[in-house]
Length: 265
Image 1 (tube, helix red, strand yellow):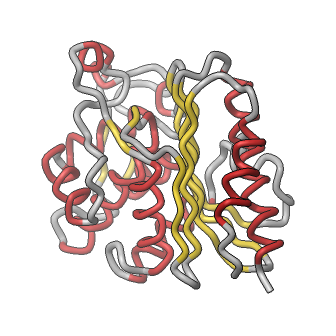
Image 2 (cartoon, rainbow, N blue to C red):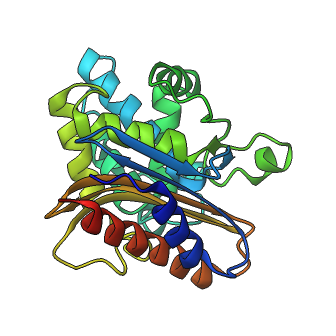
């Protein structure tokens, strides 16, 4: 591949245009080791942190600390707003740990996420993050804990770390090849398609996880194309309008896709 990073940077800059906010981008090409990032820095992770929670869940399933078919129930005190399906169901509803992981990723379910954080342990998730070599990512609070966020206990990650964890998953070097393949399949069932996949051909397989907070629009995923696979992470902070932020991320995604195809012999 012709790694013309100046062309890539120019196209991403054009895709961002005059959109308000600060956008960071990371691109990894697994087959040739190409890695490039623009503006990477720790930002509020929003739901991107759920990828790391999933990794720790599969690690604990591998070692037998937890079991995929163990059933967990939520109480009324566990009910939180935001994204997800469980909030529409009555307290006492039960799901297996594997079903909770699926809901956490595909529907970005916040109740499922909090149940998993409680079961896995915040310290264990952060230890797993460090073991992956992700130095700009930390889990500091449960989902929708605005008091913790206001006190400065915010969950953080960066496009560099998202690119790294997704590259490890793609290469089967995160937990083990079987677990990593299962996690990639879960990412492929993501229901939010409004950013990275939005302007790409509908026939492409995109295994991604989005993240949103007031003022933040993120997406990170593994994109499979006829020219090969690439990993793309996009994070936007200080975004004034959510829809505009999504459209900007989608334009960045299309610019990277076009560059990858044109740069492949």
